[in-house]
Each structure stands twice: as C-alpha cells, then as structure tokens.
Length: 465
View (cartoon, helix red, strand yellow):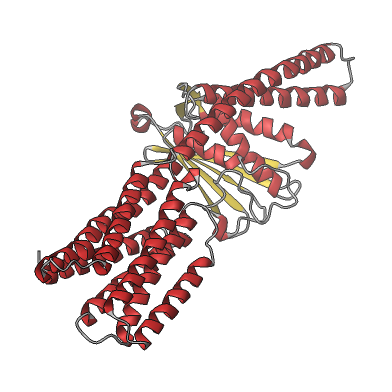
C-alpha cells in the first residue's frame, strides 16, 4: 500500500470515528462522557483532514492547527473515559493541550525539521494513550459487571497498538541506517504512521461504543435485579401484613358480635354504632383478603371468580354500606336503575372498586351532598355512572388521577393515599372494562364504569324496574 492510499484510508477511518462518537452523543446526550467523545470525534477528524491537506506544504499555521486539533481530540477521549468511569475530569487535559500547542508553535517558529515535529506529536500522543490505558484498567465497577469486560480489553488492545505505532515512528524517524533505501524507508513510514495506527483506531473507537452498550446492559440487569428484590420484599410484606392484620380484626369482630348480643333493649344508638363498626371491620377483612389473593396470583393480578351478580340488588347493598360508613357526612345517595341485569364477575373485587368510587364522591362532595348512581345498558355493555356535586377535577389531572399514589391539587385537606383510583382501574380492567372521569357542566365530577355483558345477557330482554 502506497503513502497516498494509506492516508485516504486513514481519513475515511477518522470520518467513521466521528460518526461513532456522534452516535454515542445522540444515544446519551445528557452524559458528560458522551459530549466529550462527540467533541473528540469531530476534532480528530478535522485535525487529521487539515494535516493531510497541508502535509506536502511548508509548515505553517494550518498545519499547527491540525496537529493541535488532533491532539485535543485524543485528550478529550481520555477525559471522556474518566467521566465514563465515574472519575472527576482532570484539569490536566487542558494543561496538556496548552503545553502541546505552545511546544508545536515554538517548533514552527524556529523552522524545526519534520523529524522534531513528528517526534513531538508521537511522544505527546503516547502520553495520552498511556493515560487512557491507565483509566481503563482502573475504571469504576459500575461500567461493567466485571473489571475487564470484552469491550474494555478491546479498547486496551487498540491503545497498545497505537502506542506501539508511535514508538516505532519515533524509532524510524530518529534511526535512519545508511544502507536502507529511501523506498524502504517510505514503506516503513507508511506502516508505522498509517497502517498500525489504523488497526489500533479500528479496535479502540468501536470499543468505546461497545463500552457504552456494556454499561446499558449492566444497568438493565441491575434494575431488573432490584425490581425482583422489591417484588419479593413486597410479597413478604403482604403475607406478613395480611396474617398480622387478620388476627386482631378477627378478635375485634368477635368481641363486637358479643357486645351486640348483650345489648339491652332500647339501646338503639349503641346498637347502630356497633353495627357500623362491624361493617367497617368486615370491609377491612375483605380488603386484606383481596390484597393477599392478588399477591399470590402472580404479577399482582387477581384470579377473577366469575359468579352471576344481580346488579341492582348488589349496588343497593354497596350504597347502603357506603352510607353507613360515611354516616357522619350524611350523604344523600340515590340509585337509578333503568333495567335489571346480571353481570358475571368477582363480587368482592367489584365491591372494593365501587366502594372506592363512592368514597371519593362522598369525601369530595359537601356534607349532605347528593350522590347519584345510575345503572343502564348501552348495547353490549353495562354502564355505571357515579355523579357528585363536589369541586370537580382540574382538566389537566383527569388522566393523571389513575396513577399510583397520585393526589390531585384539590386534595390537600382530604385524607387519602392516592391509590384508590389506581386499584379501581386495575379491577375494572381485569373484568375487561374501563373507567372514565369527567367534569359535569353543572359542577362536580362524574365517574363512568363500562363492563361487557355476556352474549346471552346482551341479546336477552331487559327487565325494567
């Protein structure tokens, strides 16, 4: 390979390097190492192009600019490696660039021979490449699962080739045997100045891209492992909580039954309070059972126990329970059923979902507020609408309220955990339905639950109430 062909191949390689470095930047634009590597790719390509274009001319400003740009690009690679390894980027990089620029300027000003300039460039690059090897050997364990991954070994091999090439270049420049022909020296210079550096470059810079992907893989594995540990911890907590939760609730429930059986005739207020407490405890037991069953079923999904539910009677029972639980707010709950229909679903889960919707409607409405529950058929679906006269939901939060632990801007003075609507949506979706929230023109919010009816129910006759 002649000198011109080798220089063209090296220029194309530099162009490919700049593309690789820019690719890493666009893949991780917020990372400091990505910015440094992108800058290094551009500077190296520009510097090498200037050097190639002015190599045959008298040394001047452009040749100096090209060499400084090439050296600065290599220094930025080292700085990027330090940032990638989690180390502080050193100010020594700026000092090395300034020192090299000053030294090269003095050589140009003093009309130094090409041998002196080439030796300075090679020696400076060797120093930078040694710093890169040192950084790779001591890189942070977060960069890869092992201390020396495949990409790291590939990068070190490329750097060693670059170091060897520049060492050989210094030897060829300083040691010129008399017996060696100029043609042989030209071929040797081509090998040490272009071909070996080309091989090292083709190993080193793609290895940077592999290092990036190695880190992404490692981070994904760590994230997956952390998620698995969190799920296991959650499962253990739910099991422990459900077990410890059930026992005291069972004791409370038993003693409430005893107290109620011993009530004196005429003690209506005490009997009413005991009944309310029993229903509250029963609801807590149902919630605990539901949580435990959902956890054991895998991936947080409950086993849907399909059973026929006569919806008007079911809703009436749920509404009465909600009214008892919120008796201090004295809500006015109204049920409107245009048809009597049967839905096949999990009674406990649907009760939990509808009670949560009613809880929200009662909590955010004014005391003695009107809550209207309407059940109707819409083609092959069952539509359940709960309307309240509360403050409504800000429009920009209508799609956010289903998020886990999300609490709206109007909930500051209302107790809650932000998990109710999240659970409601999960339960309804598991029944192949959906829930939509909207604001009513006359004020307040409206929650619409749609549930699919079975085929025989869809084509059956509706029984008007």
